[in-house]
Length: 408
Image (cartoon, rainbow, N blue to C red; front, side):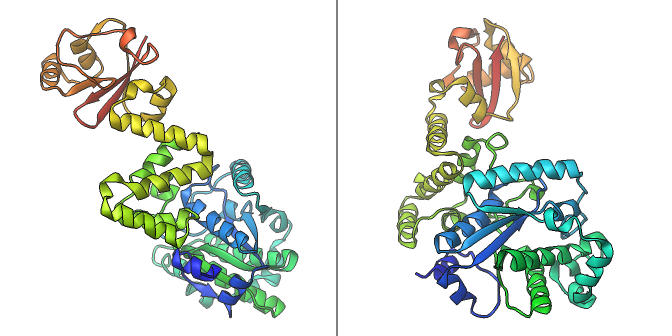
């Protein structure tokens, strides 16, 4: 397949702007850009899909520029329902540095900050040199603006389109950047930039959008949806990333393989055939999860995540270290206990059982395991010798309810 055909097959091109975009993409040798605002100090896997598309274009002979919006981040692009909360300049600067480091370390792309060329434009020049090229009726017709008209939109948000168009123009004139790629929600901003370039220079520019990556319910991967999977492993551990994609729905895994891996069409088709034959083995999900963690955090982290996942699944929790246990069960209820405590007392004092009677019922029903050992007697004593690293207790009630205890 050509590069353009590969991008289309992977579902990475939705809307297109400019004559002969397919030829431009296949020919190679152009400079293009993607932009993101520093609204957090880490990227998430929603950003990753776009950055990997940039990598495919780079492999195809193009030069990527990543714009981190130090200026636009101070404004915030219009959200579908309400205005974004303003963040301080200090927070934007801190977030910028976090994103810069991640993109530089993972990809090595050229990175620019639109604050550098926006900060010295005064208000009168802004209106004369850029504002006069924008027809208000044209702006009102853009989808993201139109959706906010009933609830109201501020002039600040309304101006975001002009700022992003200005970015494209600046990169066009100063970096010979002739194409912009972005998520499908940025289509109006891309075409605004192309129009501004045409009006100011008389020259042609190009653009395309990528469909937003979503889960089965249609929610996009992002912090505004409350389901962000962060690239920073201190915010989302390698194990959590691995588990997220290991548990990807069967209906979504082929799409994720296309978007998040560099496996060929033939390789993905072979994986999916094996997956459909024995879906219970989750072959496709395992390949996907390992590939993503390896790319983000390295092979050692991926192998560690696999080990942790398999140990939990096979009931070999005792083979894990204290740190691995804490990583796996981050966020589950925690409690402290003493050495040599009776199991009934432990269950009630830790609130795993609401009473000693309920604790005995759990035990007699075989519902309680500690470090994957089923507890069957009411006189069982919890000691440091039975704990992981002489401290950690992994208590499971029923099939899925976990608690982490620490022996003082």
